[in-house]
Image 1 (spheres, chains in turn purple, red):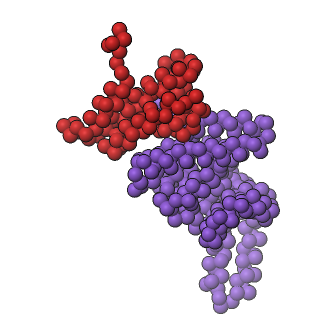
Image 2 (cartoon, one colour; image 1 turned 180 degrees about the horizontal axis):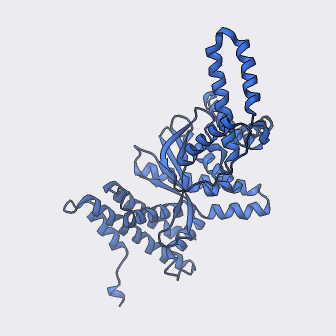
Image 3 (cartoon, rainbow over the protein chains, first blue to last red; image 1 turned 45 degrees about the horizontal axis):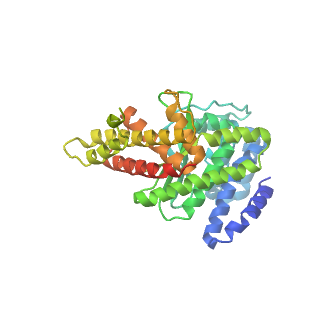
Amino acid sequence: MLNNELKKAIRELADDLSFLPEEKISEVITYVIEDLLPLAILAMKDDSVTIDSSRLKAVEFQERRRWGKDMREFEEKIYERREILKHLQAAKSMSIDPKEIDLGSQVMIMPQRALTNIPITKQSSTNSELEHLSEESLSSLVDFGMRHSRGGNLHFTIDHSLNDRMKDAIFVKFCSTIEKSSRRIAMAHKNQFNFILKERKDVELPDWNRTVLFVQFPKVKFEDGNILWSILSNETRNDMKNVIKILGTEDLSHFTDYVEKFNVEMDF
Amino acid sequence: MSSSRYKADLFLEFAEKLILDGRYEEKSRSRVVVGRAYYTAFLKAKKRLGELGYQLNSTLTIHKQVIEALTKLKPDLGDKFSGLFDKRVDADYHMDIDIRKDTGKSSIKTAQIIISELPKLK
């Protein structure tokens, strides 16, 4: 699944990529893989991430015998594999945007308390050790916000206020569109960008809530920031229009609802 | 009656003077300035939308209506207005948020930009 989707995404991006320097092309392809990998994980069958403890130990025993004196190096590999299994399990058992699961060095945990809690559907497992590890991982993921490091000048954070809505696949698509627009604009600039996607509720109208892309960039003049603000506003909407063109009728109205309650805001 | 009608622009003129007035404590004057800048933009936007045929009668939802109408007509203008609206909410309701002179000044500039764009709306 990942392979085919990756080829398709690169074909679609080919024209845009041709204008970028080589190092930027590899960065963009890395981002595409980061976007697709979580979807591939979600598509995995449950039994492929739920490994029986005794079977895992037996495999590791055989491997230890084979590795002999390079044992220390191999123990690290075993540890890494168990970590990956732990994160895969967490990703599969949480009904949130799987992009928020720490699958590598690109993702950092930011010390920020959750505003809302994600309902967790626990996965049954015959492996008590993995289940324990999974619980530890879940608590850290639920209690803290995630900050995605997307290259030198860009941080994109999905605030915990959006956790509940992240269970909705259309909303995830909506957020992904915003992230892609943000990333593209940030890549064209040298400034430091900090994007926070969050829910903004009104104090007087509790039923009125908007999704706000809150943008911070230090060391920028108001006039320059204002121009960038307009670019971000228009580019995100243009990208949303492109997504709308390919959506089916039912998803279209759902997606449009989110678009109509979306704003880009700058922090000067 | 019309000669005594208060002009919304005066809010912004007052805000421009107040933000520079060192007699008042910085955080207090900055919060007041954000509010005055927003209300100038709001009153001007409401008037312009009325001219364009929008029915903005509900006191309860009027700020929401203006944000949604501006965002639909010109998304970047709607975003600037909603940004100013949220700053004003922070200034008036959220005492834990640090609002200083820079925020006051940027709110005045944002309001000026919004006001200058309103006549172009169709």
